[in-house]
Image 1: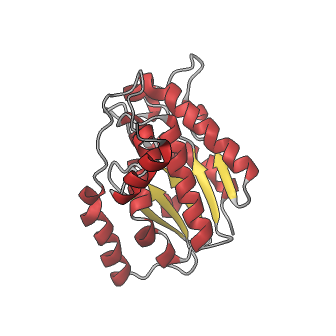
Image 2 (image 1 turned 120 degrees about the vertical axis):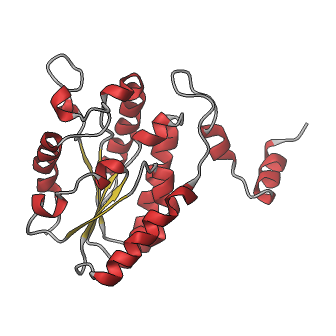
Length: 234
């Protein structure tokens, strides 16, 4: 029988890693099997950022908001955080794995003073376990620390939504692990933007969600603005 060491060597030769395979296993309560990772679907959106930068140079040492459609849909970001040099680099239905894949194009070129990251709910919705989300977040944090030591990382918690309510317990597990990581690591911050979206009955407030019961409305972004503003670096 192949022992663990021989198996690890074989996986390495094949260009695979044992951990991602383990994390991709079926998890009761999540879509199974997990949907494959296909970062190339976002190539056009990522390339569009470079074209935008060539036409309108970004501010020096900005605060980069990066992540999934909850960031991309924050179209009033600059007005909401007037006085801060913010730029929006949210794209599509990105997973944390997608953000990591494009890290070198999304973050280092701007030499940001701070990165505000929102992603993770699409990973859970694709069938990946909370441990996968946490490991992907940790990968991002380590890349940032290695590439831009001293840059502040602020993670916005995975939000609840009516469309994905059954998966929210898994999202909460990921949130707790990331919050714990932030508590013990310098220059890492965690902002709970999810609990305030819940009503007295413990369910998502309808006024905070669009007709798809997934994406947030302007009132939700107004709330997020108040929650995030105290955490921004001057």
